[in-house]
Structure formats: structure tokens, C-alpha cells
Amino acid sequence: MANKQAHKPVVITAGICLFAFLAACNSADNPCLVPTLSTVAVHCSRFDATSNTYADTALQNANFVCLDIDSARYWYYGAKGLSNFSIVLAPLKDTVRWTLQVDSGYSMTDTLFFIYESKLTFYSNACGYAYTYHLKQLPYTRHNLDSVAIINPEITTKANVQNVGIFF
Amino acid sequence: MLLLLCPVMVHAQEVADTVTSAPAAPAVQASQKQLRLGFDISRITRNLLSDKVRSYEVSADYYFKKELYFAAEAGFGSSTVNYPVLRYNSDNFFVQAGIDKALFTRKRPNDWSLAFVGLRYGVAVVKRGAADYNTDDGLGNKTSGTIPSDYFSLHWLELAGGMKLELFRGVFAGWTVRSKFALNQKSVGDLKPEGIAGFGAAEKNLAFDFNFYISYALRWSGGRK
Image 1 (cartoon, rainbow over the protein chains, first blue to last red):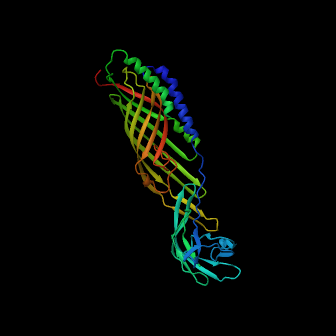
Image 2: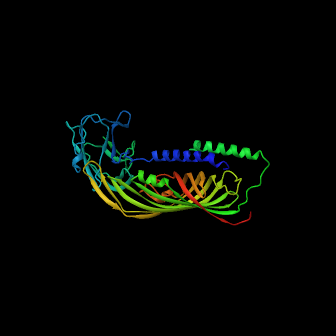
Image 3: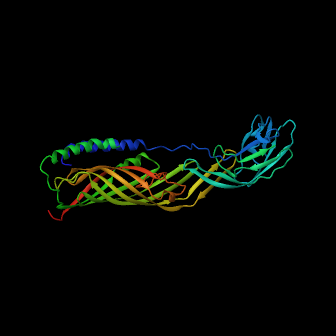
């Protein structure tokens, strides 16, 4: 550091440039960019006697109605051509009933009782907390259904996870 | 950032090359002791630019021998998280200590300007206040609650580099860039303050920081000439 005068502009300029760069990086509030609503992924299948397996089944005119969450009551009312449904639970309840009428034209209605535990889950400072669920039991009526199975009991915001299978 | 260092290093290397072409001179023996005390003026500007994070930082270094300095920094700060769904404050203080090694050997005993690299160990103690949260799933299910306040400590290792240039007798200006590696980031928990003095955002294991110090050197005689 012998040539002090020659270094002065360099150190000052470099310092100002670095500081300006870092000041520009001072971010504003981050928006919440991830989903925080946990939904139950329900998949419908029908037994195919020819292949002796269950095959994906799109319901032609289904009513999937929630009896316990008013705002979600008619989410899937008259749903056409769906085999996958994303249904919601209520964080302050431990049981929510959904009724499924496979074809609103003629089939009987079955009721599914989702019995679960709620868990407060942290996402980020911007997104805060939201609820995830652990599905404990899933009793159901069998007017039109063959069976219902819990495939993955952890109800989170993860995509491509199947939680419940409904078999006709 | 390294690009910004290049002109300085190249120039300094040229100076060094010029000197080494002459007959080799013995390394300068310290005839003075020096304790340099600094204040990070960049924090003031950053505090003005941000309404979420506040921090203040001071530094000290003491010349040991063979272009080695004992160095330490300390400071305190606070940060605020204020989103519609989550609100909490945190206060913190930190200390870190280590060594700086000058990149070039001094040729004159009164030349205390230097370019350096350094290593530090740092620890911050953070008090997070109670966090108020709201949840709303958009379906009429709204809840709210409070997460109790908490204390935690964060430890890190740091690599530093920079320059200190003596502008006037005993008065230095210089910058330092730092990369910090948290050793126990999991101890922070879910609610991560957006700024911890001495470390930065606790969101990730790795943090970068920058300081611009104005320093004053206290010198006194001592040691052999």
C-alpha cells in the first residue's frame, strides 16, 4: 500500500459502487407466492370386470356437496366429466361431511365423514400460517359406492398427491 | 464483487512487483502499536432506506505481527415483520471476532493502509417478540392467535475481505465484504427475523454483507524497532 494517493480514488469508488449495489438489493415486502389452502385430493375409479382392475372414471353429472362448510357447499354441484376433486375441510372442526351423488339424474347419494386433526403450519413471513390436516378416519355410506380408501392421510398444499380413493 | 477488487489488486501487485525488483528489503518490524476503532456508516443509510430493519455496527482491530490483525465487530439491531397475516418484532445484538491478514507486506512502518482477507466467528442473540397471526382460507374460516415470544442464538463463520485506507493521520475509510455461513440456522425456528445485526436475513444458511467503515487509529510506542 505504498502509493497511497493512487489508491484513494480506487477504494472510494469501489466502496460507493458496492454500497449502491447492495442498497439496490434492499427488497420491498415479499408477496406470498405459494398456495396455503390445503385440500383433499379425491380420485374416483370404477371396477372394470373385463380387465379385473379399477380404472379412472369421470363422473358425468356429479353433485359433490359439503354439508358443513356453507361457502363450499356447491363447489362441485353438477360437475361434469371430472374424476379428480379437490375438497376442503374446516380448521375449527374435527369432522366434515361431504355427500356424493355420482349422477344427479338417478343415483342415490352417499355421505363421506372426514374425521381429522388440524395442524397450524408455518409457510413464510409473507404467507404466515395456515392449516394442514391429518385424516384419521373416513366412514362412508354404501348406497352407490363400493369402497373408499385413505391413500395419503396428510392433507397439505402439495400437488400431485392423492389422498382419498373412491371406488364404484 | 470480485471484479471490483481486481483493479485494486492488480495495481497493488504492480507496486509490489516494482518493489521486489529492487534488492529484497527486510519486513518492517512494528515499532508502534495500533488499535483501530471504526463505525459502519453504511448502516445509517441502510436504516434510512429500510423501514423493516435497523442495525448499528462498530469494529476494532489490533496489529499483532507479521501483517496479522486481531479483529472484532459488535453491534445491535432490530427488525419488524408486518404483513397482514403475520406481525412480530425482534431485537438482537452480536459480537464476532477473528483475524485479518494483510494481502501485502508493509514497506514502511507508518503505512497502515491495507487490503486484507479475514476469518471470523460470530454469535448473535435474538429476542423475538410475540407474533400475532391471522389465517383466512377464503371460505369463511378465519382464525387468529399469538405465538409466544422466544430467545435464540445464531452462530456463524465468516469470510471477509476489504480495504482500509488512511485518508488523514489516523483516520481511515474502508469497505469490507463478508460471506457468512450459519452453523445452527435450524435453531432460528419458523419465525425468521428479516434482519439480524452482524448476519443479515436469517432465511438461509448463507448471507452476504457489506460495511463501509470510518475508523480512527490509536497508536503508541512499543516493541522493538
